[in-house]
Every structure is written in C-alpha cells, then in structure tokens.
Image (cartoon, rainbow, N blue to C red; front, side, top):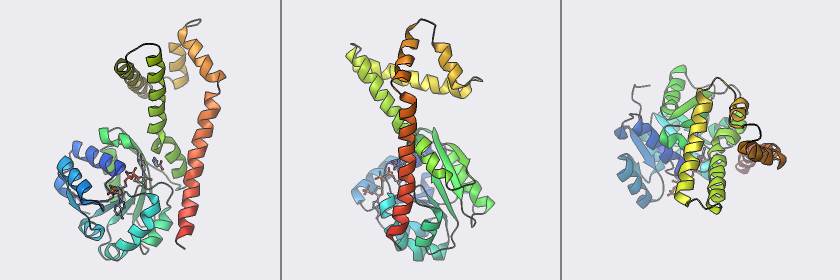
Length: 278
Ligand SMILES: NC(=O)C1=CN([C@@H]2O[C@H](COP(=O)(O)OP(=O)(O)OC[C@H]3O[C@@H](n4cnc5c(N)ncnc54)[C@H](OP(=O)(O)O)[C@@H]3O)[C@@H](O)[C@H]2O)C=CC1
Ligand SMILES: O=C(O)[C@@H]1CCC=N1
C-alpha cells in the first residue's frame, strides 16, 4: 500500500464526519479523501466544511479508494455492498466497516468474498481527536494494511486490536455507545443544578469541565477509579450523601442492565442482518 493511500468513505453522516474531521486535524490531506452519499446538497456541505472530494456515485468513490470505509447504517449495508461488489472485486481495496453488529463474514459475503476487511467500532469523540476504537481484521488483511487502519484510528484517538470478533459486541456497548451515556449524565447534572438555581450555561460549563477533569485524572492517575472516588468523599461530607444516593438507587445494576441491553442489541442485529439477505 502507498504511503498516503486514498481513503474513501461511503456514507457522510455523524460518524464519517467525526472521523474525517479528526483525520484532517491530525494532518491527513483533504485531497486524499473521497466521500459518497445520496444527497448532493449534504455532500456540498461536507465538501465546503472539509475540502474533501465528493460524489453521489458509490461505485466511483469505491474505485478511487485504497482504503474504503463503509459508514452507512447497518440496515442499508447489504444494498450498498452488492452495488459496489463488482468494483471492489476488481480493485481490491482494504475494506473497513464501522457498522454495529455486522460480522466480517456477512460483509465479505455481500462484497463477493475474499477481500481484506477490518471491522472497527469507533465513537463520535473521534471528531476532537479523543476517539476510542476496537479493531478486528479478517485473515486476508496484511500486517501492512493493519498498520494503515491503525494509523487512521490512532490519529483520531486510541485504536486497540481485538483477537476475537465477538468482543466487538462488548466494545460497541462500552465505547461505541458510551459517549451517549456520559452525555446523559451531563444532561441530568445540568438539569439538577438548574433546578437549584444555577444559570443553565454556568451549570453546563461546570459539569463539562468536571467530567473532562475527572476523565483526565483517571487517565493519568496511578489509583483506580474507586480510590479516586474515595478521595473526593470526605467522611460525613457532601459527596458521601450523593454517592450513597446513587448506590441505594441501584446505579451499578442499572448500568450493567443498560450495558447488556446494548450488547444484546448488537448481537441481535448481527443475526437479523445476516439472515435478511440469505
Ligand atoms: N453514531 C455513532 O456514534 C456510531 C455509529 N457507528 C456506525 O456508523 C455507521 C453510520 O452511523 P451514523 O454516522 O451515526 O449514521 P448517519 O445516519 O448519521 O449517516 C449515514 C450516512 O449514510 C448515508 N447514506 C444513506 N444511504 C446511502 C447509500 N445508499 N449510499 C451511500 N450513503 C448512504 C446518509 O446519507 P444522507 O446524509 O444523504 O442521508 C448518511 O450520510 C452505522 O453503521 C453505525 O452502526 C459506529 C460507531 C459509533
Ligand atoms: O447506536 C448505534 O447503533 C451506534 C453504534 C454505536 C453507537 N452508535
């Protein structure tokens, strides 16, 4: 693979935009990126924002790419794959899918078989260079190609390889969906502080800074999160009251239940989508 491969994106939504924005910030060339999606007006917005090349023709985008990132909803992936299959069977780019649930075998089957394919479960903080991605490669992927995908996702955050594709369900429920869990916490904290009389803007600013500070501390500290939490809880103080309220209200089992619901949905999607096109 060349040192600066052309990267194609099929799909131009939330996740493709997050990855492209992060890649450009980290020094990838806009001239080396192609994006395809059905709505020309939306594509023009993407082109104006990022300076990338755009087309409404998925096959044309596929033809340009050394690395082709499939960034459409899982439910339309089969149609997209069967449309581009003749092109990619000819040009044999490194295929990358970021879709939740869809297995490498299912995707490879839809693409005509035998292609190098990496499944990635990224997340939206990729847009600000703080993404977290789990990666799994099928047997056709060379070490060189692995390095290429790793360098793309490391450029927008942290990329970690998995040996077992099944673990991607667990990663989806952790870091793929995870940003939404923390946004929910921000919403709830902001609402509670607003009810207590703090202006919404101030409440949001303090809540965000607190979440960012706690994450940075957890990342840098030699202590585990339980110890860091105890360090905030002065005996007989305020934090203890809040933490006891969370524990008594069943926050831990609720988190586990929510996590399992996301993981189970990922498994169900894999089954439903594989069955739907057989
Ligand atoms: N959102 C997230 O946090 C994460 C999402 N993912 C995965 O990423 C993938 C994309 O999700 P997300 O970005 O949120 O979804 P969006 O709905 O935001 O984006 C989907 C994109 O696909 C485009 N599209 C629709 N039909 C076609 C077609 N036939 N050919 C080409 N493009 C098409 C849409 O075009 P138009 O804009 O014109 O409608 C849109 O740009 C999913 O598979 C999801 O599982 C993975 C990790 C995290
Ligand atoms: O909710 C979803 O299905 C996708 C996958 C992970 C995050 N968003």
